[in-house]
Image 1 (cartoon, rainbow, N blue to C red):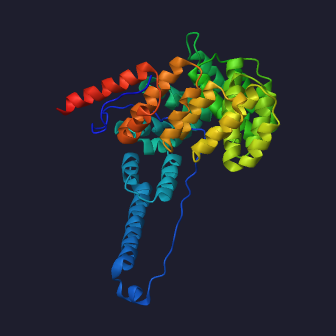
Image 2: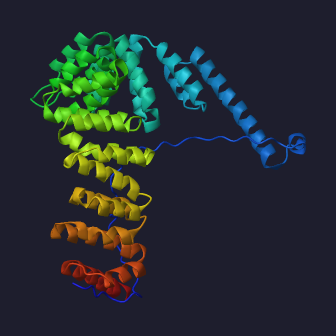
Image 3: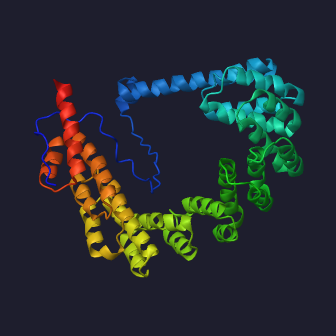
Length: 429
């Protein structure tokens, strides 16, 4: 029906939903940049000005850091264990603190670990100190894994400590670690301790780690184990071998999980090779990821992506490929992306239209909402109009209202817009 909504002078709708979450199909990498500037002769001699002040501050901080390090080193030489640990917290140089922390851990005897770990945990462990905790548990696992696991079982509620200890133990004595993991798990669900074992074995013996992983039922734990195994397979055996390993998996759920994780690690460096592999090995996961590969390819070289697309026969792979290209184009050039859907309308499906709207809406809301009518499902159209128009009305009520008043929309969408505006008008009184 033709939209007839309330006047433009109303305040923006409150509480509009954040529609544009979308999919994150790209990996971005931040690069640190440093710049140096030469001080003038007067600045260097006078020590005045911003540069001189910054230099003086840096020198004072450096001297302070050295003093703290010297104090910590002295404490390590003659203080008790807990005092040494407390002193290390004052060491501001992260490299020096890590070096001293390793020295302190190396100085512990097997009998001293329990008291030391208990003291470390007593004050709570902030996220920035989890690495220290992992190093401490790893060292204890190499000194006395049974004692470390006994302590962790009695005093820790989440699996982190036990998995960390088992990973260290499995790296040098896998059979004992496996035996402990099996004997300390009850029930039919996935064994959480096997995650640690697989993590420790992944680099040392990926074949054994693979065998253990395939014995696990579908679960969060199996996914965590897979997260550790895939990078190890890539490092130890290379992409081709990792793909062969995945091809041999008979469990469809495990196979899809492995495909997704391997794709995440190859798609940026080799999007075309990744796309070729996905298309050559059809599955639920590959059907979902072809568009990601073409998205990356188009962001890097759209001409190559279009050449790849044109070689594909009509069907799901071709539609998936076009979806990736359309999404990549919509991020910066929504109108060009819409033109691609016009040119290759036979390859357009509802999923492509929805994702086009997600990727283009913030850049060009008018082009985005104007293409919602491509959806073949009336219910999906209503949902998409409601989500996008709510957000647009919040961001730019005048532009959104002009578009709504100039277009024919589903009756339920218009009714909903009017209800929202009426509520806003009442709340403003």
